[in-house]
Length: 244
Image 1 (cartoon, rainbow, N blue to C red):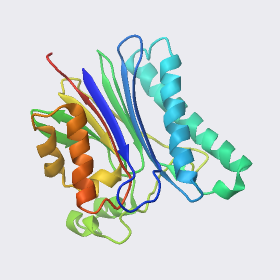
Image 2: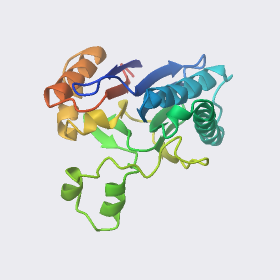
Image 3: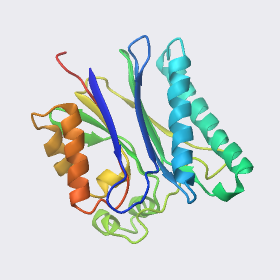
């Protein structure tokens, strides 16, 4: 396995509210995480950092993630804890009230692959040279597409396409979608919407298929996103199966 992760402020924002990490425990189990923060007064940066740091450190503190059922229960528990930590921070810092963050994560062991998400940061698998989206965006426009009120084409440029229906820090109780995926994939790819709003899936796919190192692939994706406007922070975590 090889992995890389990268975050970039983009071309428009004056600071970066994203957080990203990849960690490996002593059993060779992998956690990938991307969090895209929101809120003024550095609130988004703090919210995403709280979520990313808490989930990462909790994963590394375990003796092992255990079986699939244990992992699902752990994901729900640790994300709820992160949500509570964000609430605790805002209670002590009233100027940060309203801050929050999306979260998307993936856990890979020898036995299973799980994805979880809240918000509109995305999780994909890379298989047979093609990216396949696993997670579902918790946005207003996605809800309208599902109900038939908008077409996918209309949703793409809708003025309210970034309105979130779920986020950490938005409610005292959080509901995370969890996806159980076959492990026979060639890669795991997580990103914030700063990438997917700038590049089409086929453009991301093309870069991942180039004969480049992981770091160069991620840097090229960020470069292309910024070249198209870079209107948001951009974060990517990518794990690639090599020589197996």
